[in-house]
Length: 106
Image (cartoon, rainbow, N blue to C red; front, side, top):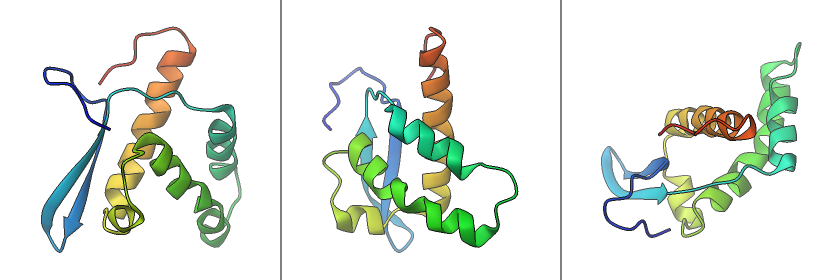
């Protein structure tokens, strides 16, 4: 998604080739859907094994494609997992702030 100059992106995700950043995906606004919120809540349920959690991560790619509609499948294959998990945390913080009427912070 193209972001106008002088507008700070709320979400960013780097695409790598090896250790080199070859592209940065950006998003300047996002509304978390109820279904995605339900996926997040199910993911953090108590008593789940690591394997159970990994099986439930299938919603991540569609979520990333929703946030970054210009991202290709190849782009998403080349993002770092740690960056994705940091982004998911930020999405939840942003959605929580918006849900309670607070101004989401970048």
